[in-house]
Length: 220
Image (cartoon, rainbow, N blue to C red; front, side):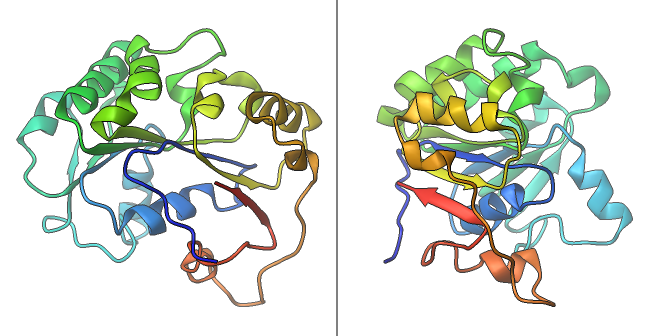
């Protein structure tokens, strides 16, 4: 069965480190227009050092632009943007301003690489994040949120999402919170299985729209 995610639907992706959360978003969103990635972990710098593609299958300067200051975001002409903030912009006020810009711009997907960096606790998150989750769908201004620890993030991220990608998580409390927020008891089950030897994450997840991966639970 082919899974299609609408431009007006929020997506929630979680799992422990190394399970492939970011790869799912990177592969799927490569085919979407008007995407803004909030890179709070500085993945851009890490990939440049390793001489790796910054966005698999896409060309910098043609398909996406990297910016380090929020004031430059509105000047970008490429379909996609990677906002990798300088140290002084790794602050709630800048996250809030970015979310406000996405909301007002409309027809834009905000990909948050680690939601805990933006919303450090279940009750501490930018007010514009709530605006995106509760009112953004009508403007096709939506959120794709990735996180390692669902226990520590606001419930609105899960409760307002239409699609879920749940990778391996060892902490039962994380799964309990997902079940409570979504009403989907099947998420208490721990997925298992392994990719074929020699298969990269990118190769394994290119088919994410068409299959249910052995190490992944998909709902939507």
